Image (tube, rainbow, N blue to C red; front, top):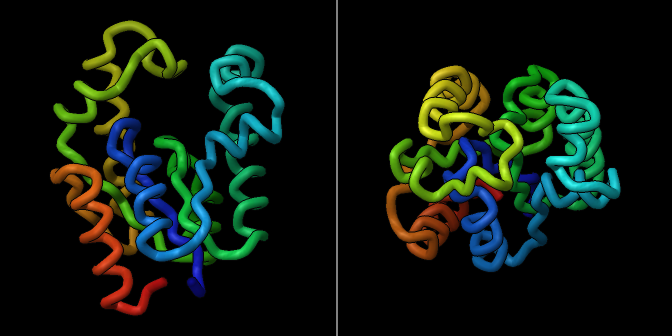
Length: 170
């Protein structure tokens, strides 16, 4: 691959699952930005949120993004809120191809576990609807490509790999 491929979208849209499968199709490394943050910070995402809140977490996220960008090109699954900082959008668009995995909201709500998501306290459905409404225009603005992720993960990853290879985007 010549460029990084950044997968963006809401929690539960398939970034990590499809990213892992896509890396196999394209023969490149996969990086999950949340895992990179945990490794760098030596504490869990919920612990980071509890200690420094959303703003502090977003700072950690940008630092991890910069580290991944400095490495060889790979598939990067980002966190759902990465687009909330304009700096992150600019970094991703400059360093590679940004793909929004757009999945039906009801499917994401059904698949997301609330107990592992610090920003889903309270009514999960309402919170996800609110986050999606706020982030949708950011995903649209950040993405080079909008990919409708409504098929099983294996099929979506194969289609996405064909799209990337067919357009010589990788």
